[in-house]
Amino acid sequence: MPEKPTPESAPASTRSPGPTAESGVAAESGAATESGAATESGPAAESGPGPEAKPAPRVLDPRSLRGLAHPLRIQLLRALRQHGPATASRLAERLGESSGATSYHLRQLATHGFVEDAPERGKGRERWWKAAEGGTAFDEALVTNPDPEVQGAVEVFLHEIANIHTQELNTYLGTRHQFPDTWSGASDISDFTLHLTAERQRELNERIHQLIDEYSGPADQDAEDTQRVRMHLHAFPQHGSN
Image (cartoon, rainbow, N blue to C red; front, side, top):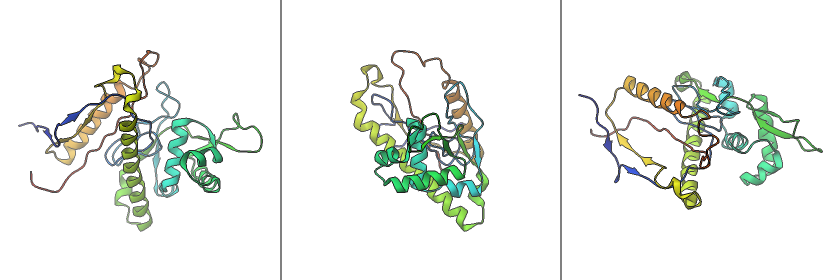
């Protein structure tokens, strides 16, 4: 008998107008989002330059994960992916940090290849930075790596992704009335309970990612009411009775 989704909350699907603000990270089971983070079992869905050019995602290894797994570094990469090239001082103002802190962490991100110079924007003495092209994929092997430092980086990375997803949703809920009326009912906040094996969950994740890919092309790019839309996928096992 096929598994039937069970609405977890009342109602199972709550709709409200408008897309969320763009983020940049991802979660544990499949694809990454736009701030340079990804998930445990699949490639990143994010690409820097746009829907027509999707460079292969960079698969994180223990060294590069440790280089990225810091809350401010993930926020910096997210900001560069969302808003484009910026200086350390501009990023500091946007994120409420000191320019000394953003400058240091940008250099660390550059050491690991996540950001690079944007010389075409550089005027004067201040250095401009941009996100490196391509997304980031979270190698499943990192989760079982026995190195305590790697495990610590995994925890920081995944929890920061979850925090950013929460921030994005809250931002949308606080600004949803700013979007055109045509977006009323187009957004979706849903949750379901399924009873699946790990293999079936992987299959479902892959099918969802494939469907999203079908909608990621430029077909609607020039339409009058096109908005940037954020989608989060969270799928995880849960203790408790069936």
